[in-house]
Image 1 (spheres, rainbow, N blue to C red):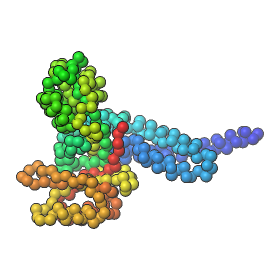
Image 2 (cartoon, one colour):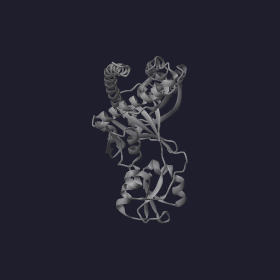
Image 3 (cartoon, rainbow, N blue to C red):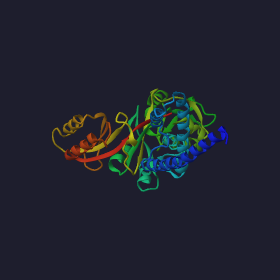
Image 4 (cartoon, rainbow, N blue to C red):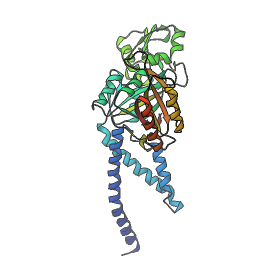
Length: 365
């Protein structure tokens, strides 16, 4: 046996040793997929992959081989994602609207292989997931210009699902019309109330009449079917392409920085998918006792545990007149010792307390 044959035998021996390790790694990828499916998390977590690459590169002692090992690791990760994506073909994600709605755009970006399930309103989309007809539901919860989506906050407090991710999507609203229409000829615009609010300055300047629709894509669909050159829709460029409309005027939202946060709900409570403490967030909903200083006591407890409260909102309760619940977002992990102790203490002073979600945020391109 010559030297080359001996080297090839050693390589073959290593390949045999690596094969069961590869199988074991892919089986673990199945478990990762199952966790992501339960918690409505996307296949790709770019930040986590970068951390793994940095950590694993340190295992290589020969500096001349580090770059090649990183390429090898990237290929292994790609194979793992491809395998998880194939498994995820059966995933169903509910959303409010029709194809082209911003929730559809966000959901397709997060779960490109999932089946997107169209629903007529927020409530029915939420119930689809709650009743097991969908694995997750994606709903808008806040816009940087128009503010909170109260109905979704109410569902989060009163329902049984958990928020396991927040996805930020930059939203550009456009005036759409049928082919041949012109912006100067539009008399009435139709869209979702939030979209109309985002474009309030433009609408007022043009003197348009407005009509509300359940979502922007349904408004565009209506304009396409109506065929009236005097009626326009405010919606996305993607929606214009879907329904054969033309962009009569682009970028008609009042603020140049127009971002919508979408909450991804599922039936299982996540632990922020292992996010570092500086990336983890959680949301609680609570009611306070009808006594002086009740809210201040709760805020003091939150502060004493070292959690920064990034936002606090109040919403009217369904039922009792003039009673409200509070919706607070905190920075940090709910499933840390401090987080669990915080929830225990809040439970002793709140009439009702619900951990609505533990999550990390991502920005969709």
